[in-house]
Length: 177
Image (cartoon, rainbow, N blue to C red):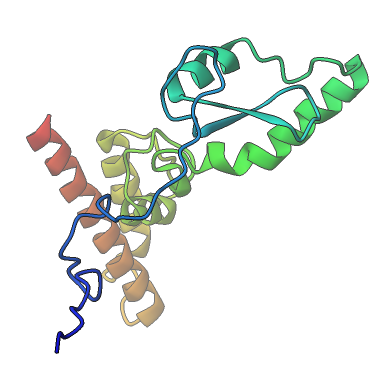
């Protein structure tokens, strides 16, 4: 009596390669005449049409280089569509490389940004200005100037921590640079 053999495709790790199954797979070829590569990049056949061409990456890039998104639209419709695209995609531009932190060149961490905000400085300020702002604020909220005031002591401690964060970041930049 023969026993059924268990497949190697169960569980983890998979004991056989992912592309080695015995079932047939459907591969769509590039719609460009004469191209035998896999056509997995859809491209519209005409503006505002649901029909699509399916190109390989090389031919999709060639097709899209000549594509006019606003073809067939009058000036007002094209302007409205461009405005809508900018509105809908503006979040992606803001979120680009370290863009979450706000103004500046994107080279500061969130802790540095909070420290600069506490000092009342912009993100693109140099360390000499940080030092100057820290000393001016420290003279205002130093515990020796207002003895016994716990709120002033907390402000001074927060100011010291902010300065220390910025000082260490500056040292790291100098060490790397």
